[in-house]
Image 1: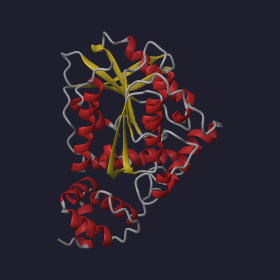
Image 2: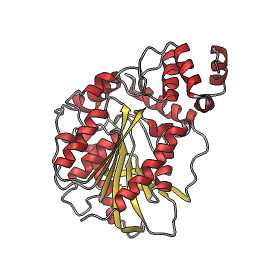
Image 3: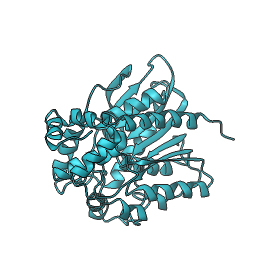
Image 4: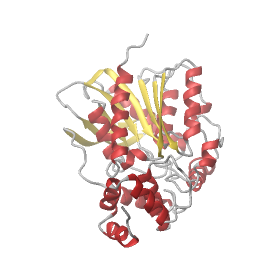
Length: 357
């Protein structure tokens, strides 16, 4: 099956979401032909052909990375991109936007409850977006999948973004949200005060930092779910150089995030506030850590998993070799991304429920 450039353009004219879903239904051999026809210059033989298609199309359109020099425009672009991919959201019995009155101020959040009449554990979720972009809306579908398939309440927190806010302010809001949930466990009907923290990319970084900072506090989380997290601003590992071009997250993105989140605020690159791999790793909660095989952040996340094990932390490390950064945001258009996102949610709950000695 051969797709001509005219047919591909006709797909795109129907809308990005529709076009992406049509591409996803093509046989892999047809997807690979499209990649070649678009002169995609990068050689990633193990990458999901559908992802390669999307990357090739974006490159042909002159689009690279997720962050631009203009942060305000980057936020708008990311929101619009996610809206264009959207289809029917996963149904959850109760979804409510709420305001959290925290010590650090008033923060917006979104509460998902798949069974409001039941007591269920709570997962506090911090969205990705390089600390600069992203919102409750950009990660709404993943939170729905998490609530449904982990069979848990989810509280997605709209933490303040950089560069307008210092990392210490951002982290404090995220920690305060955890403390708030613990304080309101009865009102939220949290099962046995079981609370976990979770996040993807920058949100995974924040979840890890919060887990470290709260390790000796009454509101310490009982588990953490870290999805392709950013763990180390100081070091550049082999995956950075292998996958810094032609994929979702590029070296240009990393440089802009490092500047706006770290260097503008004059923080050392190895400060545990922003690089949890250099933090205190003792007495941390059981950790379920996910990486994508084709991701600049792959190695630093894998190293963090090894470090946790060395400090006697219970760790489940799962690697999706054929995926790249950001795959949980692709569940509207990629059957593979949706399948593994659901798998992650189910397996995290099994991991969390496992009796510990």
